[in-house]
Length: 485
Image (cartoon, rainbow, N blue to C red; front, side, top):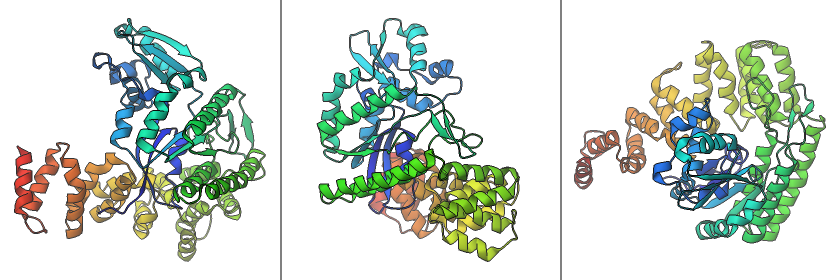
């Protein structure tokens, strides 16, 4: 059976979600997550005959940006999704609390509130699509709509999560950290949004008596979101700060002790964030992205080395990863395998291994290095990369086929809530064909087969029939043969 993990639902933004990918601290799992959807959007599902389709979204959003989230938002599937994947804890961040709110009145008079950054798409859908000509539509000021459904929201939360709730006040800003370490300011356009977000956080904290995490200042900006070629839109220290706060809260214990711990973390990280904003220290995430870009392009290894060493001096253990790659490959330094091993040991997070070598794979150079590094310590590969890497090793794409390693990586991805990799994991476990892998196949496969997957049903029948390496089980064989029909 799977080891117990503290499970979470998240309603909010990638800021909160990414904190759960931090390798250090407690092992937490996200079971249900709604991005760019606010909590008021969970009520009043769209009548079946008016549910939005992929084609209608694509008509007004040619890039299909967050298509799934728009469908969840409009069709009202969000509440069903969260409750069918309910975790022990609920985390809500206020990032989208200040986004524009739309009031949609159904032909039968019922009202649905949609609060999201996708409002420009909603206006087109409800304003131009003839299917919605009988719908009413208007904008509602951000702070007004909180009172509209607050009783429903509070009741829903108390019923399903009790006092296991965390609200995060995330301030938005047009400020971002540029590659050269300077801070760019694009205006104060989010000031009203931030006031609404803080107002919502105050309301939720008062009504629920829940834990509250305040981000030390507006360190986010969504002007530049292309991580490979542009400045990053928030600094990695935000994720580290949130993870430490969440770990502290979920450890339990005396409420006063936890609150004091949160205050201490706030003060500590506030100093770090202020130093980044005032250019007294580098943004780790920004600089790591810059290093990756330099290594991917094979240019200015001297600058990459300088940036790596700067981050290491600043206490960023993740910088040991690209630095170790430079010694492994001889990028701007003499090849030194012993130095590579030493640096790799100093990093708790192997996510940058894949980021650095991804460029080598894309150019067809040295995929053997990826095999070496991942095989060396697969349990330390960043969880966000495990699914893609596992699929590569299962199919033999740019690397030798290795179903054992694929199973290990894919299992980590699935156990962290990335359910889309379950079919790939089952393929890997079947290809591995060991006693342990077949037992895991049963554990994961039975739940998946219950949803009607015929491929999995057939393989469970073969396992219980004794045609693989496990003993036959006549009762289970009969049960699954009946399901086949």
